[in-house]
Amino acid sequence: MADYRPETRVYLCEQVPLDDTYSDTRDFADKDSQAYYFESKATHKYTNLSYQRVNNSIANPRVALTCRVPDLADNLYNCNYMMFQNNNFGTKWFYAFIKQVNYISPECTEIVYELDHIQTWLFDFDVKSAFVEREHSSTDEPFENILPEPVDITEYTSFQNYAPLDPDLFTIWYGILATSTPLGMQPTLSQIGNTFCGLELITANNINSLATNVQSYLDSAKDILTNNVANNIVSIYSCYGEPGGAVQEETKEISAKDNITPPQYYDYTIKNKKLLNSQFRYFLGVTNEGKSMVFKPEKIIGNKLTFNRIIIHSIVPIITYVPFYEGIEGNWNYPLTISTFIQCAWATDSFTSWFHDNAFSLFAGLTNSFTQTSIGALSGSLPLLSSGATGLTNAATTLNEAVNAPDKAHGAIFDKNTALQNKRPELIIYEVLADKNSIIRADDFMTRFGYTTNKMKIPNRKSRFRYNYIKVTQPLITGSLPVESVSIIKNALIRGITFWHDKDVGNYEIENRVTGIEGW
Image (cartoon, rainbow, N blue to C red; front, side):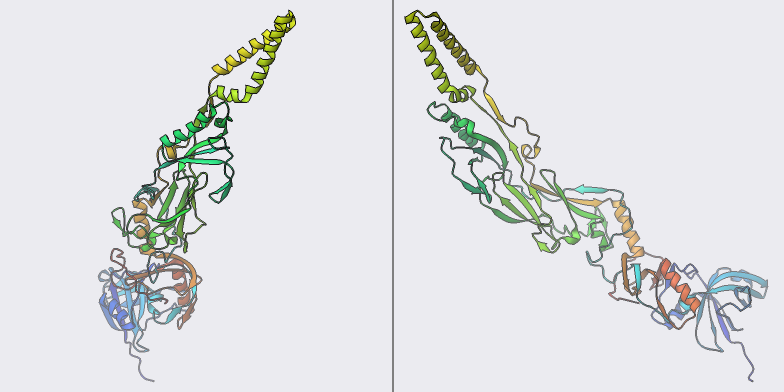
């Protein structure tokens, strides 16, 4: 049997940014670049040492792995990592964390180490499909990744960055509804705004025209030979849009560039496109009636929030803004409807109204009283004379009360609708944005830990240029490595681990652009 000659090489390294928590590890293109990196960290190299174990002995309890090197302990306290190769039995490099440096003698130091299972078997295992909780995506286009992030937003702020959608639509119209025409004629039956109407509708686009139309009813009522048409007015109201006009439809866009995918929030340039999602920024549409609806940027068609503005010119015009949303141009699942109007007040002459209602009975009563008085005077009948005189007195009293009665008020004297009174725009779009500190906090979080994924897939290990974070549930690992190593690697993936593709481990300030590479 040939003599055994110890030829194990042991390199002790300093400032290796890895530890046995496996929160971070290095990734390499091949074994040579891996060995070159760690050897560049070696400050003490030893050859011709005895065989170094890669696992614990079979003794119970198991003792720590150790290695003795011909050096003074004080020279080695700065070392935190080691690599070794048992040349007698192969060319494989093993990598390990230095746990302790123990003084034995001036010429001997004991190194207590623990195998780095990921670096040792980095090219000997694969990770199959697992439930990936978080990872850095292989692409980062707007609205590709829409799952919410576990980041608390301190507050949201609303900005009216966009002009109202109806800057030239502040003309107020007026409508008169009556049961007859001003001349007392029966109204023409019609269809207004796709709805049957049996009333007379008269419209006006200014107050003078409205006053003229109302006066025409009041003037007709003064003619005792006609009906009291002033009482035929059912309602006088003001509204947006012309009552009874044609149906109109037009397209409106909020007037601002890059309103869906802005490059900055406040004065801060975002790194992760997921910050464009509605968790951090959305649009709020508010009508002049106070109705509101949230519009999420990820559901908007194109790069601008767009609406169809549809006016149904019914008795009170109905204005509806229908968004281009969720893949539908004009999505009626999300309408904002406006039907603002104010019920106006008007007055009619109470005597005219009373006279039209009581003229016949008044004249009949007066005629009867005159007749009784005349017969009583001619015949000397005191009862008839007294009855006739009483009738005339009562008629005079009633007529005097009617003449002096106050005019009658109709409609709503008070109205709490401030939209028309203040000429509020039909629709205002507000940009609602998380506060700057929350934006930066979320950006830093996603820069370091990637995006929420929550689906079954092979985790991405090389989808970014500088580093990839991976956190999975129940990973499946295959390859040629010990079961103990498989268990440790699984636990690292379950806790979450960052694979660094360059030597600048821990530097999150440099851009970590996408590579488009999917999988392990």
